[in-house]
Image (cartoon, rainbow, N blue to C red):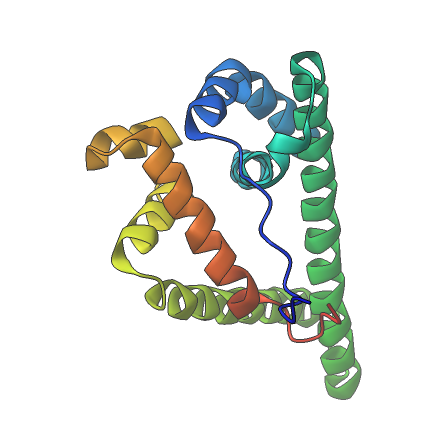
Amino acid sequence: MNLDSSKPEPPLLDTERVQAVYSEHCLALQRFLIGVLRDETAAADALQTTFTRLIEKGHLVQQQDSMKSWLFRVAFNEAMLIRRKETTSKKHAENVAWKFRGQLGADRGVDHRLSQSVHHAIQQEDIKRVRAALDQLPPPQREVVKKRIYEGLKFREIADELNVPLGTVLARMQAGLKKLKPILKPTDDPT
């Protein structure tokens, strides 16, 4: 009887397959996400997460024909998640501003400036958390994550710039995101 209750990790999609799928569908997915989100940065984030999901779960897609539909479904779900997070963040900032407005008896101009100040403060706090989390990553992973997120480079561009294979860049990104996820998990998130 095996006392080790941990399940083995499922096999990841091989690097060559990920590269082929990325080359084939990246531009169409990017255009789709920009159309859905109306924001290039948010679309890039959703695209990044879509290909991370491909690395993690793409081996479960059995037929070549279903890969495209699976990618678009994942991309759409990621876009909707981003929209929900943005809406929640905005509502939270507005609620905090409302509370302060009530306490201060603020007029509309003060209310608007206060709402902007609260939203800015929340953004600055998030930026500090992300920077601190990035500093915890090993340098190769941190470099790839920063180039992808801050510089907006595509995986192929990062690979070319670092003079490493595309698969290495994808693996570093995946490992970096896996390490960042628990660090950046919202404190009020029950999962």
